[in-house]
Image 1 (tube, rainbow, N blue to C red):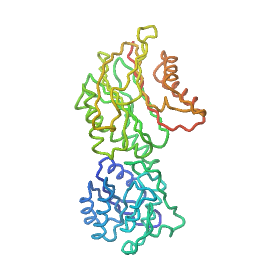
Image 2 (image 1 turned 120 degrees about the vertical axis):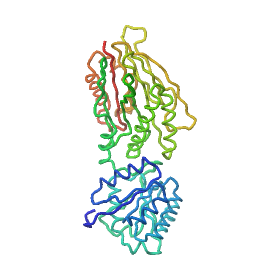
Image 3 (image 1 turned 30 degrees about the vertical axis):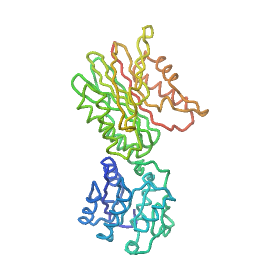
Image 4 (image 1 turned 180 degrees about the vertical axis):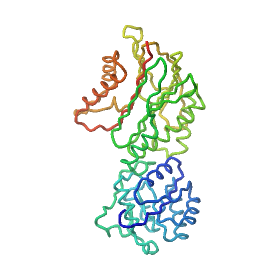
Length: 410
């Protein structure tokens, strides 16, 4: 972006709130880019361009045909506005030819950080005369004089994952995680609480949360988005926000919280991703835990090894969130006695693979927990993660790890 001393004035429009927030955050982080306005649908995008006359409009709409028509309308009224559509089409998609003929740039929703920067740079320096030309340009992830600058690589479409946003990973990872995750575990008299998140990449689709519902009820959330990259991180932000919103409305009914979150996820996203989630309501005074498990790996309650039921599994009580409009969840109640240990985790632990492609698995997880159950929570957490890392060895980790450990004082 160093070829011009003037900032690139960019407007952004998306009909999905989570993607609009993500696009805004991305653009605000890019050097020499000035965000001049936001719109929530195509009509607002037209009005926004009329009022602000931006250099570039990023347009993200669920319906690609609507996006194309909006782009054509804006070109008719604001000739010098460069329009970029976020699209899921493959390189051989016939629609790319049509979009190129309409003088619309196209970015894959799964672009990497460097691809996004390079693509923005090329669009920025596209001669306005070409935008006013009636001559169709070659189709592709971008069009119009795509090979004029050999120093700027032509972005290639990545494998498409519907609903995903371009991955501005290095910047957004820290920002999203810092904004969403709790700064520290809550202090609850008579209880010890510890948590950890280890992203496998710069961004994470795993998250955990602690929600103070009432003075005597603490919400526990651990979740795992089905995909990876920036799209998963933004989906995580949406899911976390929805969990907080609806948990407060149903402070004793986690099953209703899941139903409400599921409905909003299916309404607010393109429906290609889902999230497994465990949501429990802990009553510190009684030790009672009311929980719902939406397709998430079973949590464990570890009790006295000599007791009648030393290991209790908190298994799924319904399917993952965002998978079906017909999904329903039941809720269950368990009680933690003094000394009991509650362990919640994501499948980044059990599905961690070693060089022989063997998985860490539930049995190794339980063995590691039982071997260290007498230690402090930070030590249990450290030793468990250390065993996972040793097991994986030099194999690149493919999945994030989230972990919550809670002990009721004896």
